[in-house]
Amino acid sequence: MREEFKFLISVPIFADLDGMDIEKIANLGSIKKYRKGNIIVMEQETGASMFIIISGKVKVVRIDQDGREVILTILGPGDFFGEMSLLDGLERSATVVANSKAELFIIHRTEFLDLLHEFPQIATSLLAELTRRMRRADAQIKSLSLKDASGRVANALLMVADDVGMFRKGAAEIEELPLQQDLANMAGTSRETVSRMLHQFVRSGHITLDGTKLTIHNYEAFRKEFR
Image (tube, rainbow, N blue to C red):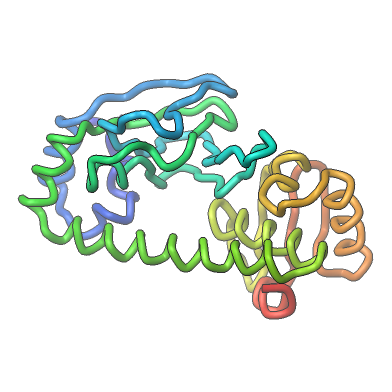
């Protein structure tokens, strides 16, 4: 397998495939690079491709009735998006924007549907991932509707840790914390509130901030207290 396609091995929906099958998938798609801020897909446009992140990060957003951006999730290497429109043939449900320089692997609808028929295990893994995302969406809705400011900001940090964090000895490390405005858009609050809550979590010993790196010292305890 060519070096540039080895990232496919780490994509969860392809975890049960062997090297020859992965190489076949590699030959079906193409690679495209995006600059920070580039719109990759737009809400309500017709979806014809699925995207797998090779490097960089993207944010999945929706715009509320007041024109404010609501961040649904931030995705990193190995994550994928755009699969819903391929499965149901409907419009995109959200906008996806490059949150940094990003390199993506693109599979078009016809090839992707052929893969599901040829490799049923991909469909099974895809269903598991969609279920995980539904549970996550339920948790986010609960956070936005029921929790106070500290709970909302804590939930946003947990979401980022789950998406792009590294876990070591019970701690969750986020090497590059999203901008405070992005965290505010995830938490449904203001940037000033995010700043205040982060400092509160530092004072209480829940987290450490070192530049753009954030560490949740005891991930499970933090999750149980705030989620």
